[in-house]
Length: 333
Image 1 (cartoon, one colour):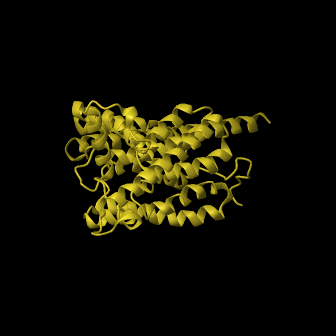
Image 2: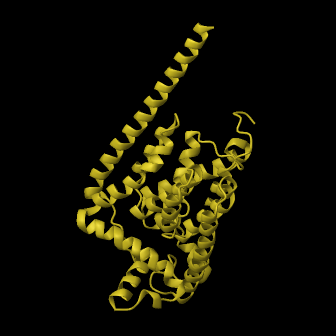
Image 3: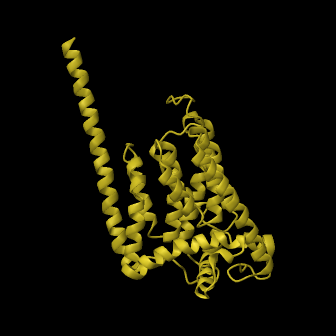
């Protein structure tokens, strides 16, 4: 009897030691990769704002900055431009960091924000796959990584006891792209709400709905009126067709940005495959709503699609997410 107890204790100790070892290895690998990404960013990293006529985000930010520089009050803006004002504020913070310490300072700041994400992945045996997050920064813009963080923080909020700070940061960064607003609105109002009901989450959902309504109205009127920053990627296209012409995958192809195009196509393939997989497995069915939110993002401009990188990696790492927490999560359905 005593020998059996000692054997059980020994096996538990070995498992705990192995768990700590793979967690340590995951963290160490992530930090090493992040260090080299920061070094790479010093000479090759992308600036926070792009010098592109077709980059709607840069045009929106510059408009707000010029408006404020003209001694105008931000509170006099049309409600449709309030989202642009929030984006301009975020851009101001990161451009200031960029001016003070260069691209490397921006990349360091953003990578520091990914540490809560690393903490989640380090608990899984296949959690080392999280190193693809800092690696992706070599091909994606800093703004793209911020919206990836916005989705990741929403999931962290669901897993945490409180996590309201993560929810606030998620909301702020979500508004960097109307496509991500649509994604997080769908995700938070379905699977997240199934797992964690709270007043904070209800406020989050309501504010995202308002934000999406404003963004859609602004985007459609902008393309109809052909305002600066709302230029069609196809000559002569206006309105809805102009919006479709600004699809991220399409613009990456015509601009010969093949690294970005590869990332988007690879994620598209994974999302479609996982959409069917998550329907078949009860223990992962919560990912279905997340993958479903990727479908509209394929056809439109914005970062809604690539923002789902962390949920995809969590699924690959084996992190279970049933549709309801009460559902059975047995290994075999």
